[in-house]
Image (tube, rainbow, N blue to C red; front, top):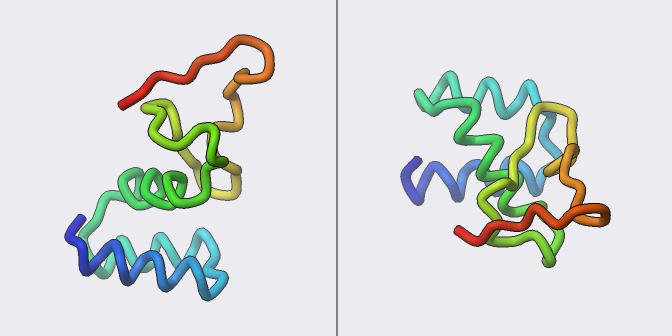
Length: 78
């Protein structure tokens, strides 16, 4: 994703976009849906998780829904 595409996606997210809006954006821009949702998860991850390679997001799910950081810490720095 280019810096301009990231900025457009960030603005879209700030406006309260839906998963469908992100899908439409990806189709229009020729961007991988996985790449876009990963970028959104980087922006929305809790501070304690930023920089972890396991940060990920799937439509309608918060970042790292299966992370067990409170049980067994899976943090792995990029």
